[in-house]
Length: 194
Image (cartoon, rainbow, N blue to C red):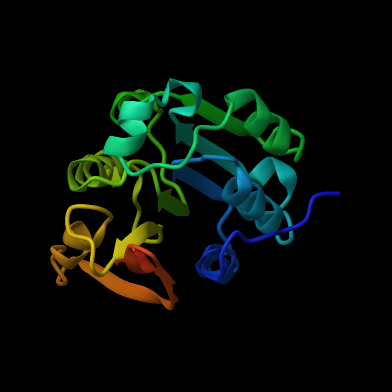
């Protein structure tokens, strides 16, 4: 039986938020190894029937080149098949798309998600494009969580975008804990429509 495991303490916020809002439908940009996907699905199954839970994930997987990895400040690529093996057997509908998020998101059917997690490419431009592309999936109840709110690493992460959001339209919360890495401090950022 699968169990919830966290790579780092800040990710505990994701399952906490999912429980608080009763999230059943998830869109994740940057699936990587499928750990967050598995955690969110297992959390939703604590309070929802399997047929009510939906997970949609997007990642480059094998398409990630060494050049893109460096440009986007990404982790090592994972095989789509290994991620699908990890989350495909959790008895919920799973759609795992391989490709660039700006190519995949426009092809997805119109629907609103309870929770959207943005942790794909880490350049300002990539994050801004992901934010623009997910707008049609956001309802008044959707919670959007960004990873990589980097306080001291300009040009990398979501800080520029999150700090620039209109606070009359968007409620923003920088989530604790703050974690320290060689490149500096990092948090998750929670964004909801006001």
